[in-house]
Amino acid sequence: MGAGIAGLSAATALAGRGSRVALYEATGHAGGRCRSYHDAVLGRTIDNGTHVLVGANRAAFRYLRRIGAEDRVMALGDGGVPFVDLARGERWRARLGGGAVPWWMLFPGRRIPGTGLGEHLRLSRLFAAAPDATVAACLGHGPLMDRLWRPLTEAALNTAPEEASARLLVPVVRGMLMGGADAARVHVARDGLGPAFIEPALALLAQHGVAARLGARLRQLDVTHGRVTGLVFDDARIAIAVGDAVVLAVPAGVAANLVPGLTVPLAHRPIVNVHIALDGSPTNPEPLVGVLGGTAHWFHRRGALLLATVSAAVALAEQSAEAIAAAIWRDAARALGLDGPLPRHRVVKERLATFAQTPTEVARRPAARTTSRNLILAGDWTATGLPATIDSAALSGETAAALAHAIVSERH
Ligand SMILES: Cc1cc2nc3c(=O)[nH]c(=O)nc-3n(C[C@H](O)[C@H](O)[C@H](O)COP(=O)(O)OP(=O)(O)OC[C@H]3O[C@@H](n4cnc5c(N)ncnc54)[C@H](O)[C@@H]3O)c2cc1C
Image (cartoon, rainbow, N blue to C red; front, side, top):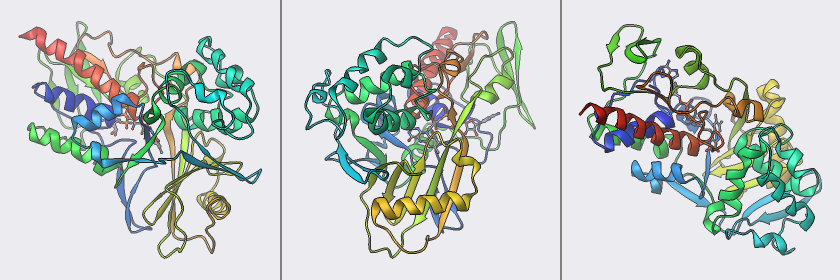
């Protein structure tokens, strides 16, 4: 149930193991929070927001390999990611990662400018963080917070470090900063999210004889004696036979309405994206630039389209689209050297981009297994141990597929 990344991950993993799969999606398209669509103002297909992977996102890359789409993402920033601090007028390249022990922190030349060794050593507090500790409480304030931990926390956890769960940043730091050189490398979809993450999955499912049933909104789960026995849609009820399993890969709030007594994260944080058409601009900015001290967090250029991303955009999302676009264009002028009037653009506010990854909400993530023995949960919001990202969604789908396969196998 649900054709976002989690549902597609589960469905493709199950189909690959030879299970008979049916995929139901409420809306008229697959992809959920990770999708491409045609935008009339820009006259082209855009994504609902820039999505980046890093090399350390193992489940996401397994998913891409499974659907045969590894070549649909590309690595950026071979020589590190360029950063601009608009408030201080400084520029540098961040080169992170490179080994299980982050020796690079010891060398001033490898550290981010203006940061000291003492700040880096606070990292040990993150690894010993209590469940209710926040990132800022562990890592403190100072240049390293401003230049590394805040951008990393907001990008990975979509939550400000003052309220973000310290424990949830640990897999990010371990994966990216202490992995090999490739672990920290940023990857983006070459031609958009649909062609990279969604269409190849649907094509693979079609090869297995599975067609996603779009416009099929699950309204109710019938449960009898601790087992799901039926799925109720607007115009049909589908009986669930003994030995069949149901993977519920819908957003947290939808799952909570369908499964009485289920505890899920409730609060969410928005992400704001601004797409700007650079057609005819003589300036060709770098593909990815991190921005500090302005409104934008990241600028990503894909061909003639410039995409600005602002994560944990709680206050910004309340502003008008025009005010947001004007502020972003001012940043683009200073950070990237673009000038002239604001070109054609589209502001996309995703208010429920991810759940708020605070200690309180993280503690509400449920396990994949439920009290109904053939009902399994999937989604970036389930207890994967990872921040709510494509990686988490893909991993949750794999876990759900393994559990569902075990249920189905018991029958035979
Ligand atoms: C703007 C933005 C930027 C992001 N940037 C990044 C990034 O840079 N890197 C990264 O890794 N992640 C990023 N993410 C997060 C990533 O998109 C999500 O983690 C991932 O897409 C979640 O997938 P999911 O399958 O768990 O959930 P969803 O995508 O929410 O999928 C749930 C599906 O269930 C369907 N559904 C709902 N109700 C029903 C029902 N009753 N019956 C049937 N179907 C139903 C929905 O329509 C949807 O298709 C970003 C998200 C946003 C919004």
